[in-house]
Image 1: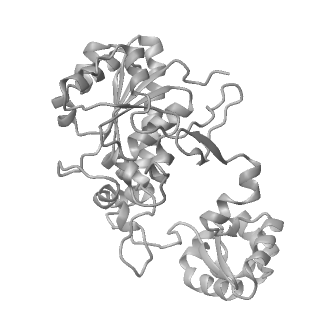
Image 2 (image 1 turned 90 degrees about the horizontal axis):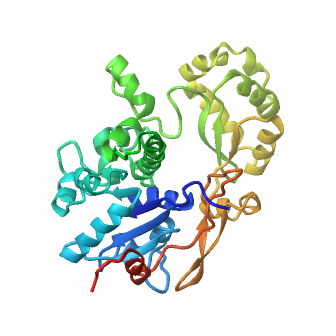
Image 3 (image 1 turned 90 degrees about the vertical axis):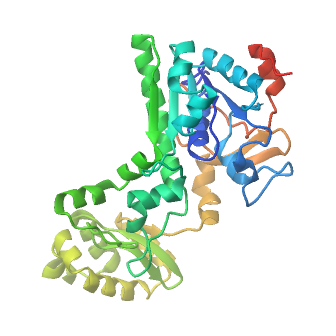
Length: 381
């Protein structure tokens, strides 16, 4: 059965995280994604960490399934001509270079749109407010996002994952799908872009809005929240728990079914969420002492029986290897040209009628160069 984007040709001129994550999703949805790489390949192929026998990193595998690899030297006239030829046939071109660099190669939106009026030029803009180019951690820092992460008593902290790039990738996919929808009506493509800094600023969520309203800079709340209590990480006798009790209904379920402390319901310090936030330190001290008295599984069972929101903080291994993950088909394997099969974490989207494509592992560098050259009549020799 055809995917949602069956028949859509995507030319991927990006590298790193954001652009490849976006084009991987488009490929999962059925698009034919041609990943253009220089002779040295996407730098993520060589990132540190676990690698396949051919040298490709796990990070590259995680960002580049369901694509074909075309190796081109973009600094050479034939390489640039090949890109222009492909862009003239493509539905979408994805870039992640600064606008000035794209213009120098003739890959800017205006130039490519002149060759192909139906083209959607989708750009990840890596420019920082000062005009320099930076990736995830610098955008976390420049947007203020990094300042609100970390423990209250510690320094600012970046997220463990490249959140600004991964969320920018999701935003770019939304923009591409919307532009394809508009093209059906107007008959022409358009340029769309997601700035990493613009996305990082949007990711400040209500913290940015609170500051605009009050003028008071937000402070770090660690694993807690300025808006709800009790919310955070607690240590059971043998491991950590995440507890999220942000409303009166779930607070009552917790008090009656988990804590067995009915007196808390009549305690004026804890009467409402606002009261609990105001008296958070006293409440947290009582909860910390309580949770240490029993092992984690005891509390997990109690939370589930009471239908209250709390559960274990699992390691990556515990999550990936859990029975429910395997039963739901959230992990699996994908065929790989050099390794036979490699593990894959599946795309989370599900359709009733137009399924997500079965995963084909990330391509070898230049694996499809000859076939693509023949298909599109590219003169690469």
